[in-house]
Image 1: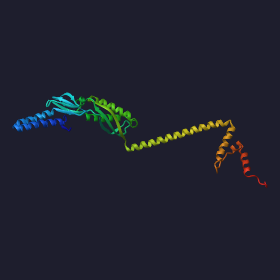
Image 2: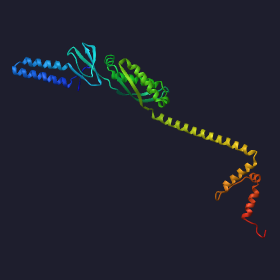
Image 3: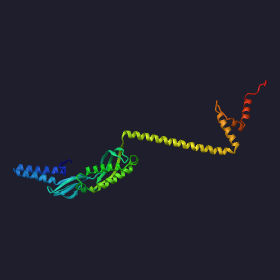
Image 4: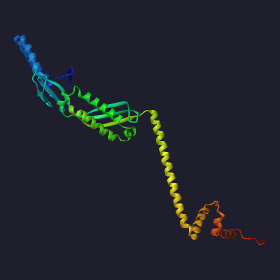
Amino acid sequence: MKDLNFGSFLSFRVPPLAIALFIIIFGFGLITGIIFEMPLFVVSSFFLGALVSSAIKISSQWEKAVVLRLGKFHKLSGPGLFFIIPVIDSVSSWVDQRIITTTFNAEQTLTKDTVPVDVDAVLFWMVWDAEKAALEVENYKDAVTWAAQTALRDIIGKTQLAEMLAGRENIDEELRRIIDLRTEPWGVSVQSVEIRDVIIPKNLQDAMSREAQAERERKARVILGTAETEIAAKFAEAAKAYENNPVAMHLRAMNMLYEGLKEKGALVVVPSTAVETMGLGTITGLTSMTKYPPSEND
């Protein structure tokens, strides 16, 4: 069914059933007038058909029709077939009661920490009271859009950029509450609000990237320093264990020496104090004598 809009208040829709009744009544009158040569009957059938067809209205399953009688609210009709009194009654508006999505944005709005941002959001809402939506506000769809945009700007002005980027869920819920509070007198209920995108200036993006990189480097150095501290503490603890146990110290030193010598072609430098303490001089001397026995001339 096609809407024919005449003016900002009245909307007339002609259902196929009304057109069919008009054709039947006017056609019958036209044929009868021609047969009996009664022009007045043809004119009367035309106005009668127009009058009857204008009394028939059909609204869709998701619609409510607001009926005014002599300019005052009379009733809500629909969905389906309903009738009005021609001339006396009129359908002022057809209210869609399905969930409606509305996109809105706030451009170049300053946050609490004076950062200009562009924010895009989407609003999910529905009309729960068709009478209020038609009578309390001139154009409820435009009113909802402007209320949502104003609320978004207010929220941005009270929120810091970091909070906006990290806590979108909280901002969504706060927006839903504020918009719902404003639109409730209009018979409109807000289901949810979702922020789709937050756009910040390019130079600020670069600065935030450098800041994040510096923060990661700082954490890495702190972790490395913590590891060094823990290693030093373990070494100190091990030194206390070896301090009064020379046998364990010798075994550990020999193990370290073995680990260094077992690699082919390895070169190990052993402090002289360690050699004297562990008696390694005798051991290495004996090892050398085994490998290189003295000659007969010695």
